[in-house]
Length: 170
Length: 76
Image (cartoon, each protein chain N blue to C red):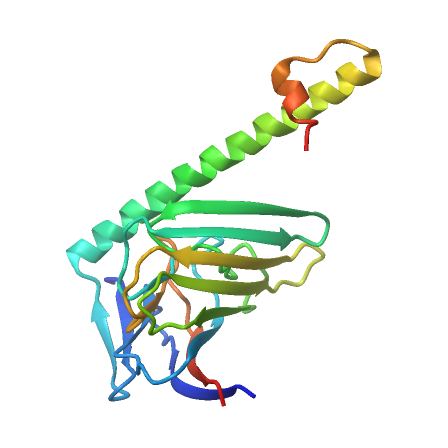
């Protein structure tokens, strides 16, 4: 049975933030998972997330999504960041936040890093957004840091949170 | 007010808030532009495919010959 251990958590203050970064991540767990509650002050829908400080074009992803009235899919290749986690923004009901998860298995390995994402954007309406993604960072670096950021020029608003958990096999 | 990032050192638990460097701001802006272009290209490709499918359907119903591109949209 997997054991979740909270490693660290961050909450954005009144001034907002351009990113929430975890550094010096312990290399003692099997997997990592980041739980997010986010809202931005702009209109970009997705986040700009990176692992291990890698910002070159090595992120490839596929995602399926539903809007409440339709379903579709999309892909990203050779991106500078992972872009399948979505966030609430000014297009959605005030003070609502998106709920998301970023799962990174075998983060200490010397192989390319796979990951999966799960996002639900919240709003008071019939048209909402749910996105499931699967991706690969084509880089063998161990994941010692994680950056969660909105697309420029947006910033996270106050009370956005990110919590990092380490997962052990037993 | 300058954009800042919140950094949590997972070893020490220290939380710091620092301004983005000029290089980070430049990277952030470049990423946004590149991503917008990629999404626009993707949207254009999706629209082209939808148009071809609609045209193929209309021609099939009317009994008219399809172009090779239209036929490709029907082959799984």
